[in-house]
Image (cartoon, rainbow, N blue to C red; front, side, top):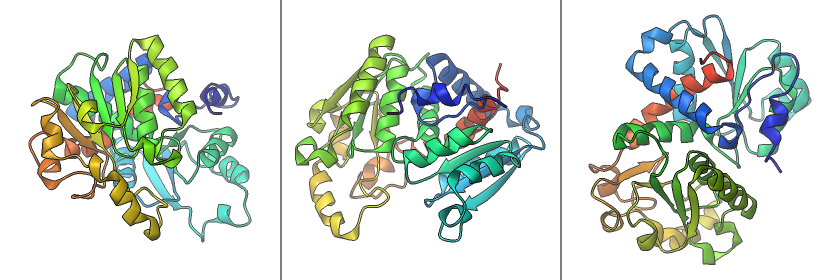
Length: 331
């Protein structure tokens, strides 16, 4: 449904905004350019302190946020600009009388760039269609590109690999998941070998969307990467460079469903034993928040192979670089 959406959005008149809705909106050389800039920013933030001087970022939030809100707001300040937080709750105008289309058109007259953490891909798609400023998806039900860019920056920092191509990553847990989908997309674009592993036999709600799998396998065929869908964790992590987990309690999970999900996902908790089936140098990653004793054991997430806090920090640097990219400010 959204396979060619990014191309259509980026051909709009007026300011031709570069909208980033999923990792599929980026090419391999663009991802690398963003990552290179993020690394430069991390080393010398003062060199970029006026790159968005007098510009305004509009931050729309329909879901709770710690890392996303703070990193975007701090990042915009460090670039010399200003950020406005706008909660999309029951008090927000667009949930009442004002249409999303009108909202996007109005705020485009005030701000320079927009990020949106919303409930659905349809919502972020409409914002991007109607706005005349760049729109960055900061999480919906279909993707989380800002997280994946930070993940890729972290992987390169810790593996010291010259590129992401050829690296092996295994995602363990809920594979019917926005982070999972964009890890697959981004990994396929960059030539990585990505395995996703979860309780597939538990039902369709625990399986990846078939259209995503089809699309990323096509992307991997172009880059020399690969995508594998698996159910056995011990086999899936063998020889990988990165083991990645996410919360098994995504937004919207009812209290009534929690016990059943814990039962189904218990074999997929990342433990020291599971880490031992990979390599001594294998990184553990988690986009946070993490529930110790559910997604991962404390011994792993607080252990020497964990890079989760570097990963969290890199949200700041990767997002700063992404905003400059969307504004056409990267050479």
